[in-house]
Image (tube, rainbow, N blue to C red; front, side, top):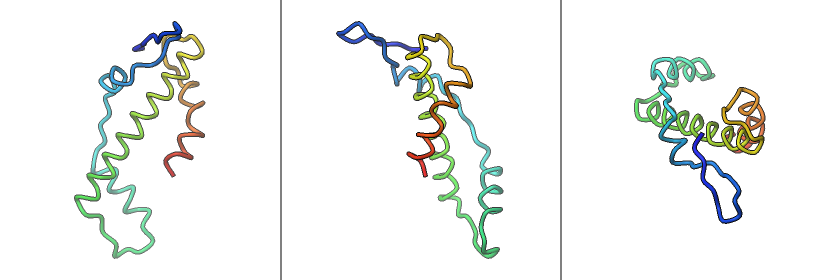
Length: 98
């Protein structure tokens, strides 16, 4: 986990280091099928630009989740992010990304 120390000697997460270590890929075809399956009108189609935008938003969501989970892990004195850290940040994350 990437750490920074501030003037008070407290550790914090280095966002740039976390972001550079996050590797997320999304298959456009899968996201397209998921979105098309949720449309109530069968005539509605998803444009390629909109699909690319949804993929980028999903990547941002994954990155933000990693940042928040690493902050939780650091606050608990852990060197490694576990599923429990991700679970702790999900409720607030879901409120922030409606």
